[in-house]
Length: 338
Image 1: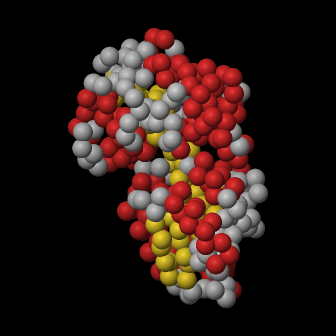
Image 2: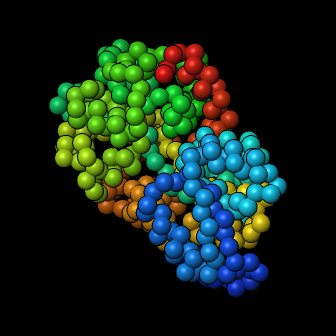
Image 3: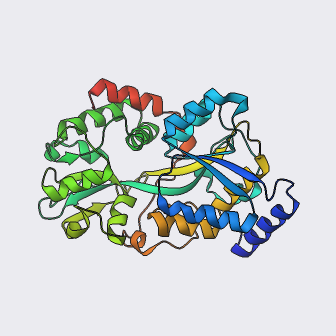
């Protein structure tokens, strides 16, 4: 059973009171590039007296930096997006296992690393969007994207994109490498253009007429509901969406998450910060501030996220999916997915 907000607040207060490192520092390495995260940091600082020192950059750059710094790294916490990067950080040996009853109870089991080296704090569905005027029968499953009837219609990002790597890794987990390779070959054959740009650009491709079907994370569309996104918000009524695989394993969800650095000089503060990210207060920020699905299922969704409707999410263990990411990249290379 999940802890109540009151219990969490009490636990947080108790840990702050007993922590010798309280009112100290926390060195955060983050590849989350969202301005709305500022509220997460300032609220934590105000509640604990712990000052957050931030180093921001691309995930691979931060991982390489922490590897190079080794035992002398000042990093206490690493935050990043997508299971593939969390797995990369673990494999690089820059995270450590931690013991936290709060994180164990608050975070669904499938969103935790099997060795407790990373935890998911928010989710994004990777789903199918389509032009409602031109596509009468949109794909209902990920497998459908490879059907010949959708030839020349699909916009999707490159094979170097971590979201696509994890999606393909999840297909390997569910259906095996052979089926995953056939799927990837089919999608390449159905592309309307060579992969280019980010997820918002795939959605803009529907608006511009470059493609009729796109694959994107949910929060890019939800953001365009909440605020004006150039080239997208004014034409949202043209776009429909499908949460795939509702009759089987459900829609693929990828993560934003983090873990405690292997050589964290402020380990207690680091654990406290991760526990704060699992609190109701922080979980609401992930949804309201960045249009994501909270990891903690009892937390209310932002209106922009609610607008997407209810759906069945894939609850596959992401630690198992992470193991198939190297195979996914191999398949991408073999089928010529640029």
